[in-house]
Length: 278
Image (cartoon, rainbow, N blue to C red):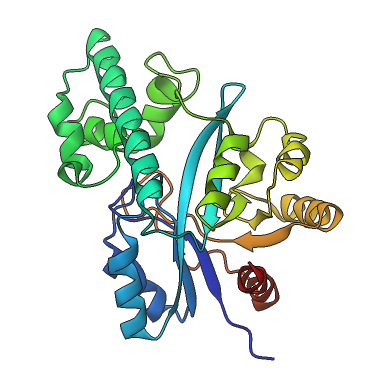
């Protein structure tokens, strides 16, 4: 059987990526990737443009989103695949998340100013596509780099706006258990993103009990050993296996990764078969 390469974790300028939806699809097409999913943080604003471009390129497009949540001061991201992205309640829910992100970003910029960093919030908004997308920490980091106040995006996260940094502000978000309920409410398939970044991997068992359907086994931050561990866990808990490059584009913290992680067709087919049964 012909293998169909898929990248199911891609970001655009609608959140904290640097590529437009069209560019993401064009790059995937050039690389021979046949199935993609745009999974921007807490927004579905890129899905219409992305899906139209995918159709024109002959690429299968899975509507997705990556939703933020917090569990015991740790960020936990839930990917929602095949969500009903035109649903009014979903858009209202995402609008509230957008406001919370904006407030958080403003508070971090104020802290940075208090620590001697001369940066205006308008400069952060400019990095966020003039606030056409979701505002996040990556936009703050890029604004700092652009002004020459720090050397790199990585430095911003490690010293200032990452967990434990002197200007870090915690999320005021729902728990991953609540987010899983939301994904299902909007007819999506909830999948735990990059589980290797969790502090407590036993959380996966509790998420499964709460309705988690899949786990992102293949991710650039996962070692081969991590992949083996999570594959075994997926088998044990009867979870779907997904994967993607988590590409945020050139100039971002995550970098230009499209195609660096490919999901095998056997896993993609299982994901699609679950959707067909829902």
